[in-house]
Image 1 (cartoon, rainbow, N blue to C red):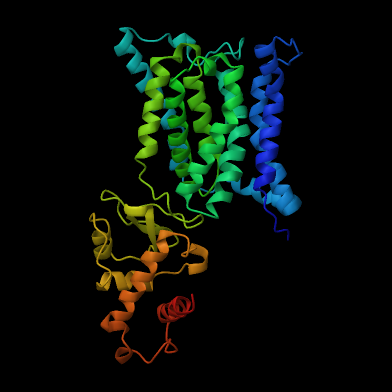
Image 2: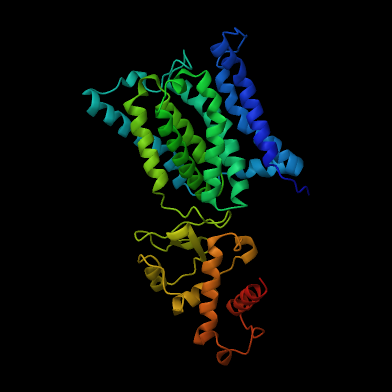
Length: 387
């Protein structure tokens, strides 16, 4: 099994492929070079991240690496709600954007021109949507959220990974300002565009994580977003209203972006019950530092009520002790030395050791294990003492 760093491969291949496709367009516009180009050539550059993901997967794991990446990125093993969300959010954007245009202009936009753009002439709305699915959806998301995000999330938090992806994503777009009239006309509006991409990266990272790292929901979302905002009649109030909604979503996520990759963290809200399958994961969302204390879903209704009551319980309480006992993720996997989760984890164990139920007088020592819960507790104790 190969153990290589695929990040340089992904970034170099992605940027070289995309920028080389855009280079003739830049030279023609900036220097009147009159180089030959293909129809819709600017759209072909969207496949740079997809090619970069395949190259990086092959570099790190060979054919098996490519297969593993594809099986995860295009998996359908996630909750059906994310299919609905991927479609419902663009529909909501449509209503908000067109409603804003109605208020601002005093009339509804032309519904017959929905989705149409001179970037892809002679195609109806369905044809334009198919193009966006193949380019912005499949081409871009296969790399950004399909390979880069989970790779970075394995080294840092999902929040940090999404911000790094945002920086790379923004940089990748820079040459478009030298040939694309829409980008060139932004002016100071480019600041809002940058903020929108950062917020979009946070939102899409959250969706990808909740879909167990499948990109299918974000693929549909991205195509729907471009169908709405890239349409000719959307320039101005419609695109601005939709981008504002995305920014609001990105900065007010009901998730725990700091959770380590693979934990499947979903913060418990006051309005959310603790119902779920035995294999589901629960967490306490700690606003400060976005730290997640992951616990198994075997939480009693009384404990659940306390967890979602708006406050994290005191670490010395019996609830905290029972929470610690239910921990089943190795500290090495959580990366506690580099994540705020480690601090919560360690403090919780100190409280556990100080509690009467964990004192030497109430147990026969770390080797006294008589059941599954006791074995987990003893294992956890040894991990903490040797970490």
